[in-house]
Every structure is written in structure tokens, then in C-alpha cells.
Length: 127
Image 1: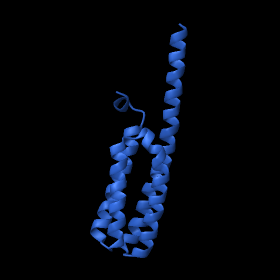
Image 2: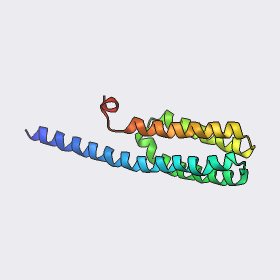
Image 3: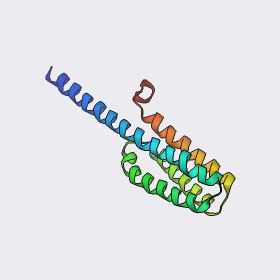
Image 4: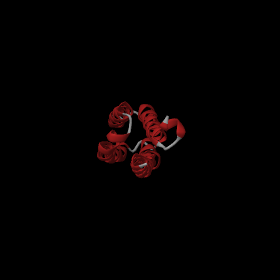
């Protein structure tokens, strides 16, 4: 009986920790997605490359700070794919390439959404 109670307590702690992380990740990933939609893409579409460059740097800084935590919970290859996409988007903005910059920013938005969906507490993700 004691082992059952200890096992249940540990399971509750793990699920509670997962829930806290999912909430933390949700708000941060939504913030990054919002930066792309509301700031960077608007600057890219208006071809304000200097402003877009500063905005992508802000996004990169926030991503790298959060990535340290994400690597403990998210699939490492998915995190690295997002890193690669951010690096490509930065370069496309640097060379003022509207089609490639906007396409890569769209890809980053999808990757961030994918990261979030894969960490939600659902039966598919548990089993």
C-alpha cells in the first residue's frame, strides 16, 4: 500500500511539473509567434529591412534564452530545426529577400506551433 501511495505521489508531481512547463511554454511560444506575425512579417512586407533586422535579433535573443529550458522537455531535433530556420530567416532579412524571408518566418511559426502541440498533455503524447 505504501508503494502505491508513493508511486501515485510521484506521478502527481511529474504531471504537475509537466503542466507548469506546458503553461510556461505556451505563453512564451505564443509571444514568439506574435513577434513574427505582428512585427517581423509586417516589417518584411513593407520592406523595412533595418527594422526587420532588429526585430529578428530580438526574436533570436528570446528564443536562445528560452531554448535552454526547452531542451529538457522538447525533442532536440525539433529545437535544432527551429534554430536553423531562425538562422536562415536572419540571413534572408540581411540580404533583403522578401519571398525567402517571409517563407522562412512562416516556417518558424509552424515549427513553434508544432513544438507546443507535441508537449500538450494528451493521450497521443503520453502513449
